[in-house]
Length: 184
Ligand SMILES: [Zn+2]
Image 1 (tube, rainbow, N blue to C red):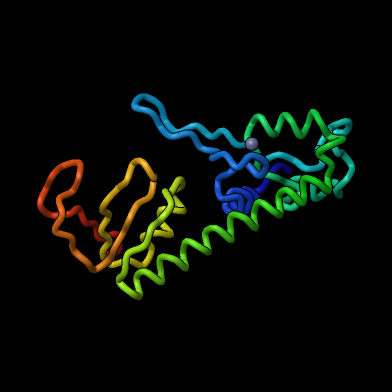
Image 2 (image 1 turned 90 degrees about the vertical axis):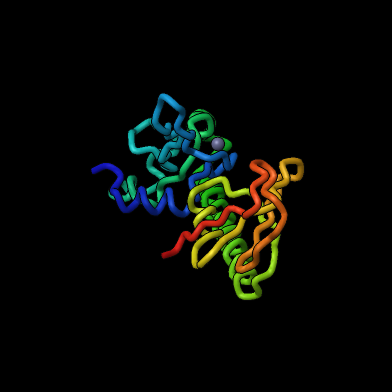
């Protein structure tokens, strides 16, 4: 049967492209010479094969369903399959649920923060966006966005909308700030 396209989308989407155990990002960036590398596995909670870890703890016709899968990095996939006495079905289901809730809560928080800023045309400190989805949540709905005062030490980025700054951009010394219009 195999894992369906829909189960894959649910798993990767709800996991926010991060390992449910260590939360590392599961796609390595492309290099000058190579494409991106996927370093995440769609791991079975209850194994499909007889003798595999936690085998028999879910109905055989549901073994490839989203409900029996957890997104893990390669290291943690090996760990949970080699240590099934510690990583029981119950532990893995809870780990998965907690992780998906964490992803949801964090993206919701970001979205609310940005929408408030857009409404007030004010300035807010944002954490760095580590994924495409997180970055999209920042710019989604903006008609103009201005990034300024990138502080490498504190790793915070100040953004403002509908507001122009007369201070030069640090890297280029240009008079006008860089702007972009993500939405047509
Ligand atoms: Zn991991």
